[in-house]
Image 1 (cartoon, rainbow, N blue to C red):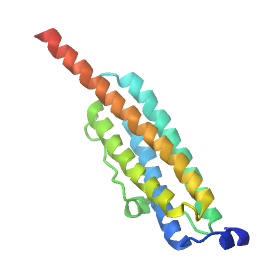
Image 2: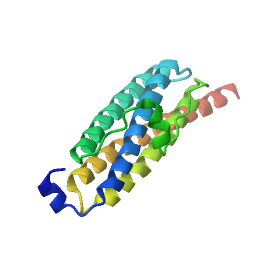
Image 3: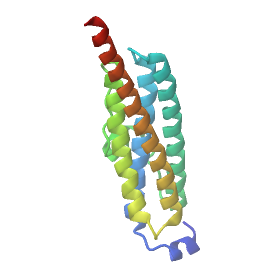
Image 4: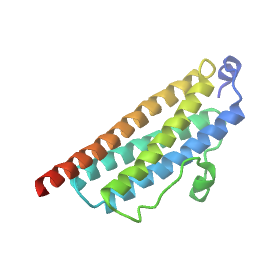
Length: 170
């Protein structure tokens, strides 16, 4: 952060950098979770959901770029080694060992809810103190909220399809 930015800021930059590096690690894990899930997914609505998971993956990658850039602007160093992502992240990465669509979606939903908590925390921590980081956190938070809604909608659609199939069989 530049001299004027530091002077204008009343924030614990070290704590913020720690939070941002955790968010960065989580974004990389989320990117991979979406990307690999899209590759292995099986089940109803696979084609539609696969494409959207890839869109979500791209958005997570964009978040990683934003967060890494902000870490550097604040004078920090982004997590440099992918082997450290899981130790920095507060969100779990779940291997898509079961490629069934509902399992993949549930795993991604957990990740989105964790990301929502992370960006709420960063937004609250920076509110009125670091406007640039606050705005970034709110922007990413809005994307994560949209992702959560998308996943919940797909899960709901699958449940409706299952109920309709039960009625047809009855």
